[in-house]
View (tube, rainbow, N blue to C red):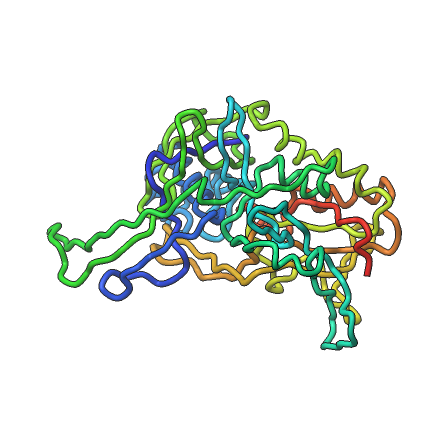
Length: 406
């Protein structure tokens, strides 16, 4: 089931820094948001629709009562998500009745103002250089001296719509250039000042604070919201449209069930990956792009890889894969609020969305090999089972530029 969530006003997705009025007076938002606020909003909505008092649910999941076994089996508790599985969320815009998602720009794109996007490519150093194993190949610009052509754009604010991500993953399909969208066209920060109130609803002295909310730049003919896929709702009552509380301060958002036919054709093509099959056949190298932040047991390294004899390698059935290079930015902290125990969740370090991993196999990919890769990686989570359920580590398979062989 696909859901489209449209905020009624601003939304708040706080970063990981501690915030207490009077001690820390500034709280910033992180955007695009992690999947956790959406999983929390969905589970809270399901509780309401089943007519379950939150306090009754808290007692049941903490072992203080023996009620609600079927509901807990479906939506989980403080340490699991039951049968629920979330894919996304994706920032999405409704155009002509179709929903077109946006994705964080891949970190191997080099974008200069006024120029088509180019690739960073794996290339060995032209001079002798050694470092401790396992050694990866560095990434270089597509051509020398391109830094003089214009100002490099901030990759943290760039997005690709589904059509241009499709071009990127299929390596400039049909020669069409990848054109990123500046995030300032889609959302903006909105600063608001508040003051903590006492139990008598009077202002507390010295307790001023500032919050950065996010406002989506919706237009009447092109509303913006969040698109996500949810499975595991069988047996649960969720109306086809309604309201729920989303993010910090429980800001209101409307939601509606979206038929798959209402998704943009480019996005449906992206999910199926049919064009990738032909593009990847005969290749030795491919890439994995993270559409959502990745939580991995070994930090930046996906769980499907392990260190062996000075290399990062993995096995997909009979297919041996090896990591060649990676475009990974600094980690993002992922936390949240545990409503059951009324305390912050432990902070975890996640690989940011937009990260790219370059991998290769020993010989040219055959049709069966390509299908194995699609089944294992394309629109699948690279994170562990529980984190993957929440929407972390969603990967898409892509083609590497021709001739990128070390």
